[in-house]
Image (cartoon, rainbow, N blue to C red; front, top):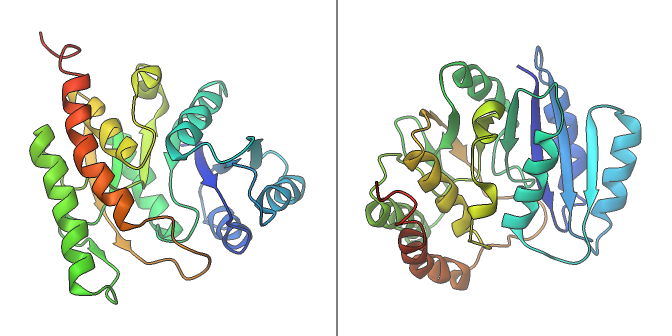
Length: 242
């Protein structure tokens, strides 16, 4: 299955070359990458251009002016991917090795019988970084449980960003109806996919903390996401009222 992975980047100069090498080295996989860089001050965009030259037809780059956010990076990346005729699956993952590239073959295989495959920390076999303190593990699990409960979702991990979409189904997805601009965008996408009747399969993953670079996640972002879950619920209530 020809797969294009959308990789939003901001200051990932250390990680990007290593990640691209690992993904493109996966045996038996037809995977290409679209790097969406938000004018990273550390030169990630220039590195992405170099990688595109080194891997023609495998690494593509979108340069955006300023830091415009995760949601818009993915939306623009998805729209570009949908324009490529030969692409059959569209993926999304972090650029910091929190999402293990080695799981991609299993997720691609699972997509044969699904519309959306989620790399899940909260199904049997899934887990988060073992060195995380107890409070951080609790906050992660509770945030996910909270979103699932408010939005009445059966999917066990709705806050993960490791996902594969069948292109033909994403073509029916209302990308322009997505309202969220931060990390709650991931929850909103899962919510809309569920309401649209997408077949969702979860594949267990181990979510590792980043080893290089600085994390973009903080308590303020998590608290903001908590109340924005309610905005997602009420924003789309009329869309699925029938």
